[in-house]
Length: 68
Image (cartoon, rainbow, N blue to C red; front, side, top):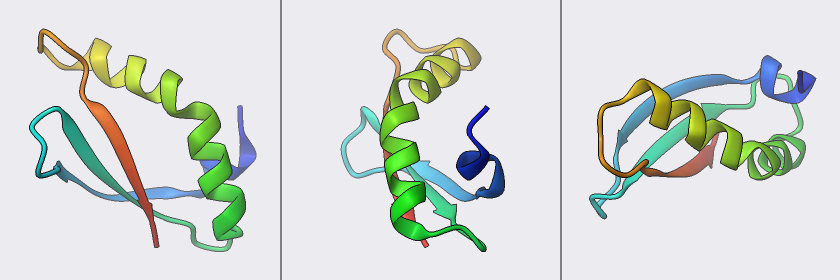
């Protein structure tokens, strides 16, 4: 329901150097970068739970965000 997150788009998802992490590269587009970073921080737990429900792994990966 967050308009800032809805305006953003995921550019790339790849395993980070640590095996328990996924690097998520997000494009801010027209959105303020600081606002998007704050929205991602607020939504990190929800997004991690959503990823955990979609993948078959024993532990949910930590999500690390990079905003372009």
